[in-house]
Length: 272
Length: 272
Image (cartoon, rainbow over all chains, first blue to last red; front, side, top):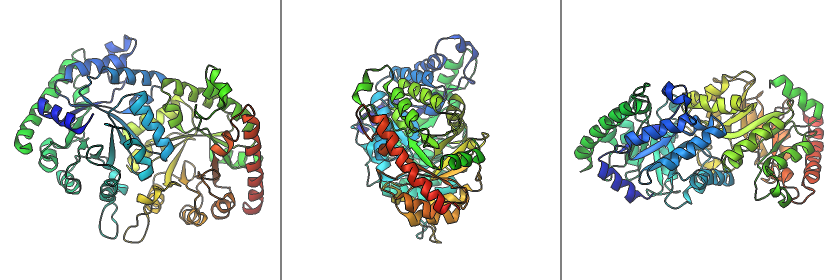
């Protein structure tokens, strides 16, 4: 998917909601466990219930990989079920030397047909570039994550007081551009998002950590939104596990609709 | 596997050779492609031919993941075929927020029974610790890699002229110890390995980049070897693709034996 199509969809739905499909056999409603592929059945119901409000779906690959070959089959079926106009993110956090990253790119962009993949920057340019060689596919590079451990290295500053995450932002702009490169930017503090936005005024951000992880949507929009929106804000547990009863899809829809409404107001306020 | 068992095996075989199972359908001998599971058949023959000389096997997960569910099945069969006394490394370079890393840990330590997994440090402590909670399992943390892109961030220095890879070494020693934590240390320059060895005198290193990637085994041993060896040196292409004819296993064995002989001499010289 290209940037224009993504923006068009955001405008059409008045939403920048990404639904995280972190689907866990231990958390999905018990009545689904009797079915042949409970993971897919759960995802299908969630997609049906939320597609109207979501512009992106993001399966975290760990949840599928942990189930072995069966999990990969559920992932593939899920991906194929997502409506084509919705952006898809393989939250895989891969990254390896060049020819190996090429294989990961093939796995997620060819074997499966994801629009994008999250990539870890530690190994540098030649670990990221193979993903950037696919047309209309995106790298979403980890910049500033929302977990406690993000402070261990991402905030380490160099001689010029530049923290590592800013060096990642600056250096990686020589690798890709706003049409094939986004950044993961945690939502734990609004002003941090503003710092990142100054570095990369036009790139899209994938923002985890709103909702269950505690970030404020209003702050994310205030500090991060651009004229093209420039944001995909993820919610996983707050939507997909809104209920663990038979009404899980209905409750997921309600949660997604509620977030979309907030987002519509923020688009109105900041995107102008 | 615990450290004592690994050291015992190194001493018994006079070898610190790790064979990288980067098995690629495009590179394996054509006659195998007719079989039902060419990847497994290739690996099986390579393992049979080299187990006498190798103390570790390291499948790079990308090669299997790129083949979809079938690839995972080949990987599982390969892992189950490796003799139990040989150390196994899932070269997966994973790393995610805590509960997700836990799932990756389950995938590689429980679903499959790898002894260790390579992990990327960018997300910090809570992305690594879940892997360290498994008994007799190991994290092999990326410190200084051997690719060109390693210079982009790993060598960035802070105010005290400490490069990022040393900060990774220092900080991560609060997370694990020499019994459950190793480091990936590229072999492109011997003196760099010496720098790392000063930081972590007793931890094992996994050294890629000897052979096809051009590092010198003699230098690696000179700068990196400890009284317990402290080294696993990987060779992939130089062994597994020594020939692409019907004699591939025989040629792989020859290449592995030749490396093992060099290693035996270095153990004699430096391990004291």
